[in-house]
Length: 598
Image (cartoon, rainbow, N blue to C red; front, side, top):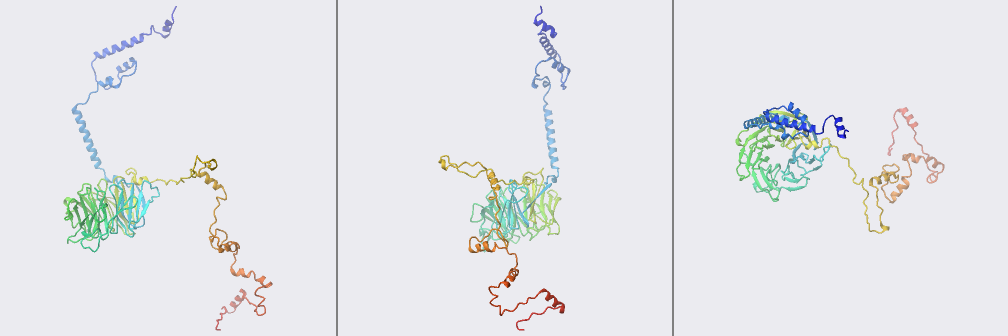
């Protein structure tokens, strides 16, 4: 009799359950034996007949990649191959850097978008951005200083603070400290000052004695200050220059007087007004531009007796050199002269300029010039008389000194310029009181890009969803306990609005001769008469009609005056309109009135 196991074997079609396992083990053994006898052949083909057979025979998961047969065929490159690959990579890096250097500097100019900040209606003489680029300060010839915060500003583009540092004096220079916590201001007076980020005064320079001949013996400036600048290496030191022919060094920790004095002299060894001063990037040199056209430099590590570099004919005599900008290398700088020129200098050969750009018209003593962040371009502005042309923002290539681009502004002059390296945005101060900001959303970051399209948030009443303040005393007696209020102020206001008495609009004050309205007289006697007699009786007639309307009743029932004069009172004769028309028809001339003498 067939057992259950035999019946299962016949139904499944095999003789025993151990046959497949034995067959698989035999196939694996024969495969390994053949691989051992067969010579190794390197092949990059991953799908071969042998692999297909192995996949069909092997049961279980595939071996890890590190143990796969193909990994044994991969050989490491030789030393010569590695060296060749490294040389190729270095050549590619060099060629890539050369291709980047060959890119036109015009592609880096942010000019696709523009916003307008309205400062006032007079020229913008000074612009300053803090190192982070989040806050802008603008000062102009309208005596006002305005702060603009890009983080909190919306599409309205309004300044969050306005003040007048010195009343009646226009602002010529603004500069943030290296830490951005202080702002240096040079106005038209003789006392520069330092304020904090919120506009509070921290330091004010002393004023000197104008009757002392030697300016080195005075405590400060005695005439108008044109420029002031921070020391790039010390956050407490700054310099200022003015019409008294001196450059004074200050320390905000010293209140009594200036720290040191530099005298600016012309060819005849006489003092000349200093129109601009600045430090180099390392703070080792301080430059000064005189009104005689000279540019001089002193070494801050030595006594300020002799100059380190000087050129007495850098610009025309009598012109105001409005700006000096030092390059990052510390050897080259540019100067914007009042003789309508822009010059590039090298202090290692300071006798002659390297390049010069002419026909850059300027009418302002505060026209600026700056380098681009990569120092391949130079920015400056041109002036124009009102209604007689177009002012321009000029981009000049540093190597060739050729104009590569001009941005026109109709009927206005470009006075001050600024190109912030972190924001990559160009700020332009115009003579009509506006500040233009050029930027590109792809090339620029933060700054003006944060306030464009930023909608002003709706002001929410902080107590709208809060109930009125209530003091809860859990230990009070039952009779003194207050019932807790659960209604919010929004519900309370809705109930008051629904109440017709509480929501009634109060009467406006009484104006003119009208009736109704709130009276201002209070509870005096005059107020009582006005309230009960004058206002209550409405009388729109003029005085003559008001009297004549009682004439008929007075004739019928005379009581006061008429009975006393009834015997001697003449009968009045009134002239009517018909009588005057008949007289005019007779002679065309009205009868002349008789005088008292006649």
